[in-house]
Length: 279
Ligand SMILES: Cc1cc2nc3c(=O)[nH]c(=O)nc-3n(C[C@H](O)[C@H](O)[C@H](O)COP(=O)(O)OP(=O)(O)OC[C@H]3O[C@@H](n4cnc5c(N)ncnc54)[C@H](O)[C@@H]3O)c2cc1C
Image 1 (spheres, rainbow, N blue to C red):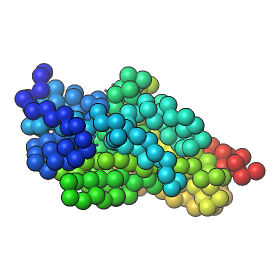
Image 2 (image 1 turned 60 degrees about the horizontal axis):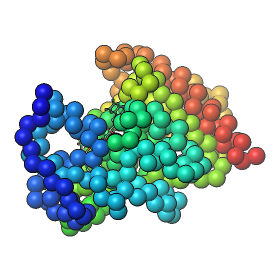
Image 3 (image 1 turned 180 degrees about the vertical axis):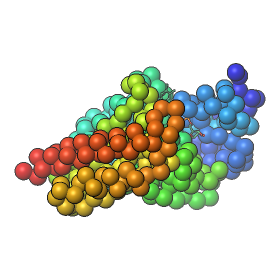
Image 4 (image 1 turned 30 degrees about the vertical axis):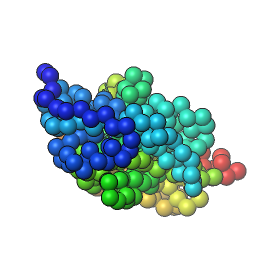
């Protein structure tokens, strides 16, 4: 199928993007890498009257390291972040999760902020933003605001972004010394969206587990600094607390079982890495 008719706006500045969003509001969609939006246009699942191109301005394509965070502008492609020098030491969780996103070709076009805006519950970048307790920076012509990741994702492909807001950037905290990170996912084939994805972050203060692909949004759980004795029970509670559903790809029971097994795996990996960093 071909998309319905739309007008295309190619702004020459951030201000022009914001002006166009103010003018067209919910009639407009921002287009970034187009890896999700273009198929949706072709299938007529999305029918915006206006497309506003936000992925071509060099000053929005910067990755800046400031105040213990990587601030990633809305024109930064996923491949650009993947290739950031020393990403593996700046933020190991991102370095480990990004190769699971689609394919080299989709990462070359898809943006980090586009994935956050789309808010797929199986997507790796929203999961990492929740796991690391990052932030989303939103801007309209009149105001700017910053929202914590856990408050930004409201449901399946649903966020707190207003129609006239641009996701200007997102911030992922950099790795604190003595912290361990692990990421794993199960999918049908490499490059497919995850059936279940899990991330663990461990430090002297304790360990957290974030689970994607099961509930409507990725969910983060603090497990404290306790010994491993109660871990199986804690993982079982987590698995049952998630709103798992049967679909074409997997049953709810399978998703809960993978949450328990992969969850245990990444928690042990992250704790072992944290222990190595501290010794
Ligand atoms: C074959 C294939 C496999 C894939 N596999 C995976 C996978 O395994 N994991 C995964 O996470 N993703 C996967 N994707 C999706 C891919 O990561 C997309 O790049 C991503 O979901 C959207 O990013 P984009 O820049 O292409 O956004 P677009 O497609 O341009 O836009 C997506 C949505 O976000 C909105 N938007 C984009 N940028 C902004 C902004 N700055 N402000 C406000 N709204 C904005 C758009 O209006 C649109 O609604 C896959 C895609 C393909 C084609």
